[in-house]
Amino acid sequence: MGALTPRTLKIGAIALVAVLALAAGAASAGGGNRVRAVNYSFKPGTIVIDKGQRVTWRRVEGHHTVTFKNGSFDKQLNRSYPRRSRTFRKRGTFR
Image (tube, rainbow, N blue to C red; front, side):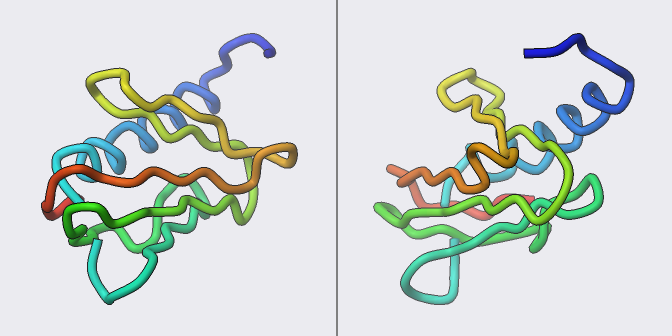
């Protein structure tokens, strides 16, 4: 793993903000939910997750991290690991 750069820190901060919303609960629109990591942000920016629903984050470009505030999930999205998934135990809306 390389040194922390301002860009890496910015990406990590953006990922943290997006995931904090996800960590509180869970995603909408039946079946699986996908969150794309593009241009220093996650799309969609808000999702509703049902209890037991799985969310998959997919790297479109760049290097991103998916980090929950409580530290229970901290994963990189890069060429080696372009997708990461998590099944949520609680229902919720995340921004």
